Length: 237
Image (cartoon, rainbow, N blue to C red; front, side, top):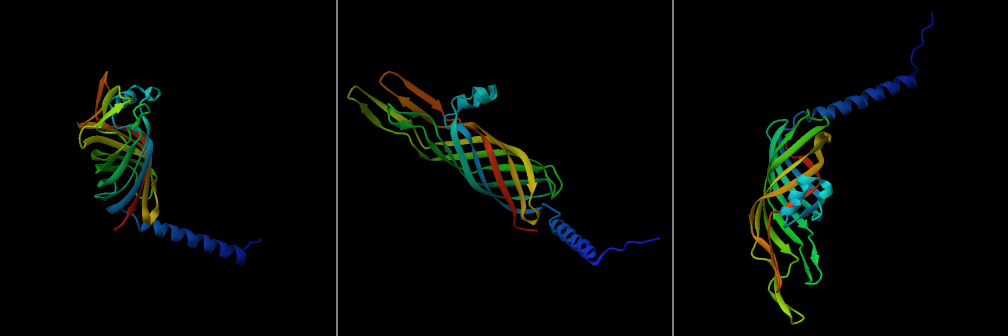
């Protein structure tokens, strides 16, 4: 009976493969728990409206009916703590930019930029170092920090005057949710990818457009829908 013993080269390949498998397993086992402190940069792109009552209603009617939303985006840095492998809380700072309709006849843009301070609970369904699903939900106070609107009395061709813009410094609170895939990054942490939705629940301010013939006023109930990517980097064991 002939017995084929492994060659020296084959034996080295087996040892090398076993070594890499050991290193990979050791690396992942070092981050067996999600518990700890995290820092999380995020970016989101989508569509929304700073005067978003109609926008929010159109979302409920279906994506094909969204006609008043224009491109919007947000970016920020968050920090938080995971109490267990699946439950945590986070807060941070965002800048969110809305690009509303421009009134060319009045040389006025509805652009608005907000400073947001989100507070949200966080749930991850999978075990550590496994692809799974996540959900973030909470409230976001927002303060207007810039706008493209004119404000004050103006005269058009000497025929009539108008006053166009926001009537005061604006403070809003919206309810937001973000959910989707959670992808592990070994010892570094994990990445969230999924849709983000915001709907204003407290409106403290009005956007108005006044001419000689009519006055249009909109309660500032902001609305937003988009795709968000967030990297959650673990700072502590």
